[in-house]
Image 1 (spheres, one colour):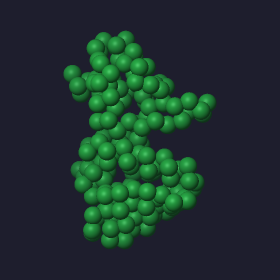
Image 2: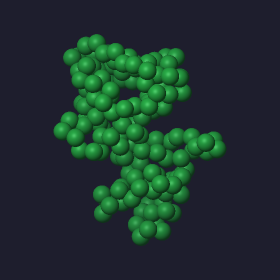
Image 3: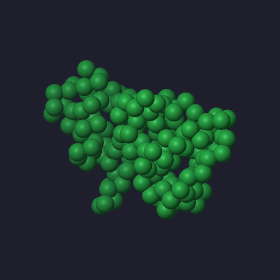
Length: 154
């Protein structure tokens, strides 16, 4: 039941504009899922949903693009590698800085490169640090939110 419910949540936030937990609960109930606010809150955390801004300036739940790619079931998913290797994420200006366990930065960077993150100008990886040059500071903030949501769902 949990798996079916979470699949429905992914579908709902992917197809419509769900801005609050109440809206999500209502949409799930309309589709036959009896849920509580606590259950929906846990599902949001487990799915690593993030709040993004619509063109009209309203907020909506979204599945991070890295999370979507990680759900494809590849041999060594982006999500697994991020969860196992990344210690910290931050940004300054239009550069995202990812601190990894020693020796893991190049592997994480290669996976991030393959995942096709939007608005990345280029990447550079050392032993334990990755720099991602983004087009704008807004792109940096979005990517850091996505990465943090994945790290928080460990």
